[in-house]
Amino acid sequence: MDNYRVRYEEWLNAAYIDDETKDELKAIKDEKEIEDRFYRDLEFGTAGLRGIIGAGTNRMNKYVVRRATQGLANYIIKQVGLEKNPSVAIAYDSRHMSKEFSDEVARCFAANGIKAYRFEDLRPTPELSFTIRELGCTAGVNITASHNPSNYNGYKVYWADGAQITPPHDSGIMDEVLSISDFSVCKTMTKEEAEAAGLYVTIGSELDEKFIQRVEDTIVNKDLIKEMADKITFVYTPLNGTGLVPVTRVIKDLGFKNVYVVPEQAEPNGDFPTTPYPNPEAPETFTLALKLAKEKDADLVLATDPDADRLGIYVKDKDGSYVSFTGNMTASLLCEYILSQRAKRNELPADGVVMTTIVSTRLMGAISKRWGCELIKCLTGFKWMGREILKEELEGNIRYQYGMEESYGCLIGTYARDKDAVSAVASLCEAAAYYKAEGKTLIDAMNDMYETYGYYREFGKSISFPGIEGAAKMQSLMDGFRSNPPKNFGSFTVENVIDYKNDETGLPKSNVLEYDLNDDAWVCIRPSGTEPKIKFYCGVKGKNAEDAEALIAELNKALEALV
Image 1 (spheres, rainbow, N blue to C red):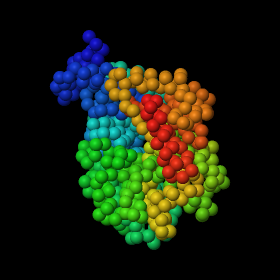
Image 2: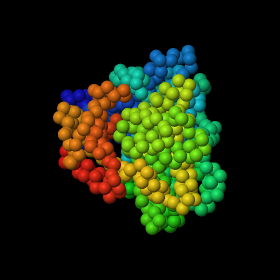
Image 3: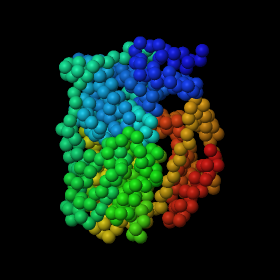
Image 4: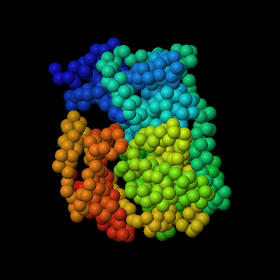
C-alpha cells in the first residue's frame, strides 16, 4: 500500500481523530485528492505553516495546528523553562477557521503550562508584533494566510522581539515539530480548565489603544493635517480583513474628514466574495474601490490585505485618471517623505539607518545616500529587519529610521517588528495632504523623485509549481541557474553573480541568486518560502521614463525566454 494510503487509513481509524474529520475523508472519491492530502506533512517552514484548509496531513486543520503548537511549546520549554513562566500572544484574522485554530493554539499552550494571551477578536499582524513586546511574551502566533485565496489559512510564529522567527529559533522549532510523528501526543485541555488555571487570558481593547497611539506617534505634520482635513478625500478598503477598525480609527483620529470605505469589502468575511484573492498587489482587487473613488473624486485609494500588513494604492492624476503604484514606488515615496521631514525638523540622526531587502528597488540606496543614512540590505522578509533592529536594541542605540520591501510592506517605527499597513496608511495620507498643500499629487512627488535620483523601474513575476512534481521542478530549475548561470539577459550583460546559498555575503545562507548587470540593472531569483512558486525580480535605471520602460520590458522579455 502506498504511504499516503497508509496515513489516510490511520486517520480513519485513529481514536484521536473526530467523527466530523473522518466523515470528510470518507466522502473523498478522487484518489488523487487523497494522495495530495496525505503524501506529505504540511511543511513547517521558516515562517510557520500555510496551506489549504481541510482534513489530512498536508492541509490546515486543528490536528496539524495542534502539532505545530506542541512543537513550539516543547521548544519554548527547552529554551526558557516553565519555572520562568513563559507566555505566548495569539492573534487571528478574518479567514475561515482562524478563530477556531487560534483557540486550539491557546488551549494547547495552556495544557503545556504556557500562558496564552489570545485576542478577543481579529487583529492585524502588526498589533500582534507590538503586543508580544508590550506583554513581554516569549513568543507569538498569528493565524493568517495573508493575501492567499479564501481556501487557505496559515500559522505564523514570532519570537520575543516581536519579529517572525529567524535562526537559531526557526530550525530549532522546525526540529521539534518534525519530531512529533504521533498526533495523539499533542496536549490540549478545555478553555474553561485553562482559564481556571490562569493559563488562558483574553486580550481586550487595552492593547488596541496602546498600539494606535504608537502608530499616531509616527505622524510629524499634525498641524498641516488640520489645515488640509476637509480638502483631501480618501477611499479605503480592508478587503474583508482586519484593517477596518484600526485603519479608519487612525485616519479619523488624525482629523481627516472625507474618508469613504468600500461597503462591500468593509466587514470581515473569510469568503472574500468580491475578489479572486484579497491581494492589494492585484489590479482586480481595486475594482470596487476605484468605482467609489470616481464617485467621490478621491485623491487616494488605499487597500490593505486581510492581516493588514500590506498596503496597495491608486493615486488620482491631474487628468482625473487613477494610477497604480507598485510596492516599490509607495515605499520609496514614503521613505523620501519621512527622511526629508525629519531632516527639516533636525530630527534625523547623523548615523540613521534605512533597511531594505535584496529584491527591492535600488532607488532606496539613492534616497538613503542623499539623506546621510546607512542602507542595510537584508534577505527577503521583515523578520531579517527585525533581527537587525534587535541587534541595535541590544547595543543600546536604535538608529533605525525606516524599512521596506517590494511586496507592499513598510515599517516606520520600532514599536512593531513586522510590516505595518496601519501606520503606512496614516503616513501616506499625511504625505498626500502635504503634497496637495503644495499643489502636487503623489504622482508629481514620485516624478520629482525620479528627476532627482534617476528613473528606476522594477518588475516581478512568479511561476507556480503545484503538486508532488512541483517541488522537484523548482529544485531542478534553481540547480540549473546555479550550475550554469546565464551570461546575459537579452542585451544586458551579467557582470557579477551572488549566490546567497554559497557565497560569503555576510547575510544568512539563503536559496537566492542575484545577477548584477550593466548600467545598474539586476535580476534576483528565489523560491517562495510559503508557496510552491519561484519568484523572479528585476530592476533597471533609465535616463528618462520612456527609456526606463523600454529597458524593463526588454529585461522581462529576456526572463521569459530563459524560463
